[in-house]
Length: 319
Image (cartoon, rainbow, N blue to C red; front, top):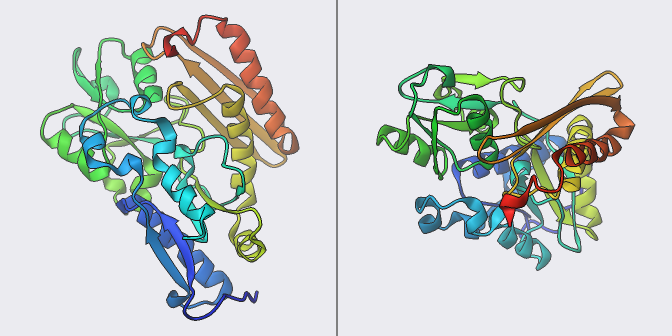
């Protein structure tokens, strides 16, 4: 396929956060575009943008994400750069993306999805079930916290923020006995060996869109739209279409422990979803199938069923 770039002095600018994982995702995106269009490395520029969520003081403070601005912490400045033309595309971990995009931006390109499972990481034991009563489980994820407390109420969950390197250092320092990372992130970093085990979705259902990279663009940029369509993975889009419809209907945010996973089998889509109370006192689940074309509607219907089961007081803790 032939594509026309503006000029040799105006490479396509790929906006990303500066963490090792974010850069690995940007490099993967660049490599796919280079291969697809037979373009040299010089045709692209990776632009690192520091987001509010990258503020080291916030990371080290171990404050819950909901207290310092939510998922938008990791996307706001990048989307502003996209809107003002400083970058041409924005590369995101879909797990971090709010369910709505700013006016003028579209999120319609996904790379092939990686391993969706959570990784169990500990210097002491091989699995959660091996931890003694009172052991400290470190996580900043409300979903993981609630899932741990549902299955292992005898464990203690402590706030635990930071990138992969920071969390591993905290484990070495004894801040917690174990933590969780995404297998997808570890694989993209070439660090899969860090995981003591990968937790199957039947045991710990992952976050919506975990393992997926999304590429955001300006809605009126037809040149970029053409380029991204060539590396877009339809199967990932079909799965996320259902999962994010489920999340949207639940008014999902970093303040809501929600898990969801869509999987494809021939022409059928299976969606599993759950909502939890953060203290682990209640977990509501659903598991349904539909045609792939009806994936988004399935997500909305599942959310409605769970909300009905939950009743009016289920999310009172968010107030």
